[in-house]
Image (cartoon, rainbow, N blue to C red; front, side):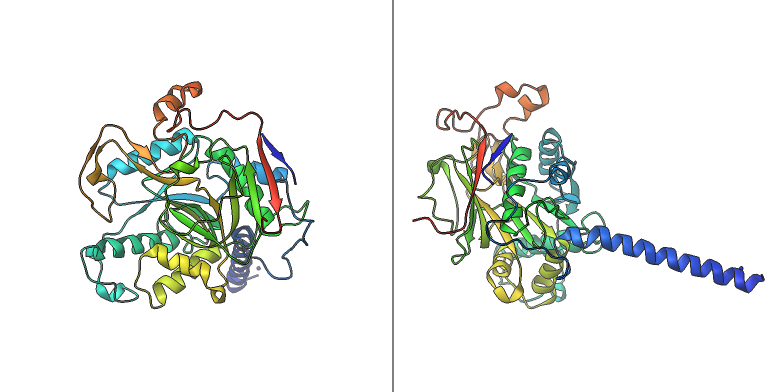
Length: 392
């Protein structure tokens, strides 16, 4: 529950048959356009509905709530990027998705060492990390367009949620998405009573759910507050690697949403059809030679690119570090090897991965926090409120 503060001869036969086929083809294409393009977040200017301040959507329409209950979390597809050799990571995230109740399709990751230099959009810096950075960049480009399972642009998908294969999320992830969708509809100026094509609102390019830092737009004071949220990471356990919003105005159980100026790390993010097109253009067709998350951050920062990003902090998805050798953690970097007796996840209170055994058994009462005793027992529902001005 969420409590909300707001043909006579042969030739003619051929002609009629061809004409009928042509008309049906046009009808199919039109239907595909109708079903795909608007839901992708981009709509014609004449169709776009923008609410004035004070008249924006603060409660999810029933149609949006129902869409969020599907097995792709309100998106057209959910993908996971996975190197074929990392079967261990694929097994783990498939299991985590299964106990959460959604379907994953695999986008095969790319090894940078196997790429032709001619295929690169720029001269990636030579060094120990080069092949890994190139491989990561290309893997995310394949999620945007690759012609088999991972195919937002090629299949003209309306939207897709993309995970990296070490991602983890709270056991309440589906409930969190209900709150997130409420916030994104408001931030995207959805009028009261309007049913957007996407349950997350219209006219967005990227929704950044999982990161290791995410900055707000400094000049945009709008905030959506999720107060009394037991899945909010306590202050002392928040770990980030870049600019984050000022949280001094909020208590230990408040998560916020905002228009984002870009972030770091791509543990989980959603792209609309238009967003995927823009990423392919700017980070693959155009000159580019940096890590992929830097490029997406620049997309959000550069107003000239008109790339609309919405984010949340603390993050709803982060990375998991499993039990065993730490050399298994990353396919990009390799630090000093250590052996863990127990795994952990950054910034996730009740880790799905760490509670998989309980969830398989259906023993929800046995679900454990990563920080027992440090997360208060909260009564009541998550309270959602909306701020148009900066905090004093």
